[in-house]
Image: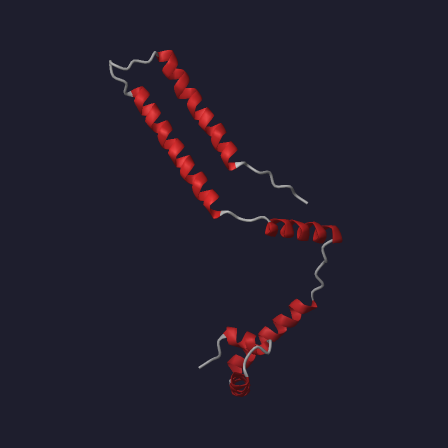
Length: 143
């Protein structure tokens, strides 16, 4: 039976308890497969530690931390999203009922073709403008 890679990573980073540390060390002395796996992980770790990653500029760090802190200060209101969604669904249903009413008018309730055409083309545009205002489309500013 071989040691799982997650456990080898924990052993490599000294994140195992003393009992498991001893068991793993004993197993690594006797099992060539696990020893090779462990050496490969160790080499991989050394490789990634040897890479010199570029540091971001001070301006980037400052702007990013200010942005994160400003977003953390704003209180999130989960009910707002539910309200906006339900309002959007209600408006779409009202629009659908209105269009159905116009298309299925009876003799008792007549609308001129000009009025129905105006209603059919302008009401969706007004609804769309209203929905855009509700959801306040925001522009992302790049640093």
